[in-house]
Amino acid sequence: MMTFIAVCVAVIAVELGLLCIGLLVAVFRIKKAAEAFEVLAYRVEEQVLHFANGMRGSWMKVLQVGATVAGGLWRGRRD
Image 1 (cartoon, rainbow, N blue to C red):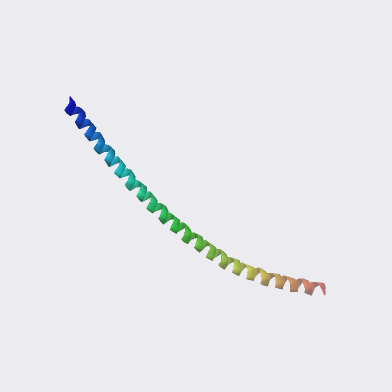
Image 2: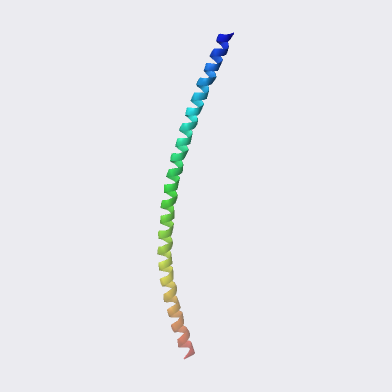
């Protein structure tokens, strides 16, 4: 009977050890994935800001030219 209990305790100890190792592997993989996601988010943010700055510059120039043309037309109608 004591041998049976000793074997059961040994099996439980091995199982817990494997479970802890598996948990550590999972935690390190999640950490690595989180770091990769952080880098990806940073790169996407840079691209969005670059695109927004490009659009802002283009749209501001178009609006400025449009306002100048509209102002000239409006002034021409008044005179």
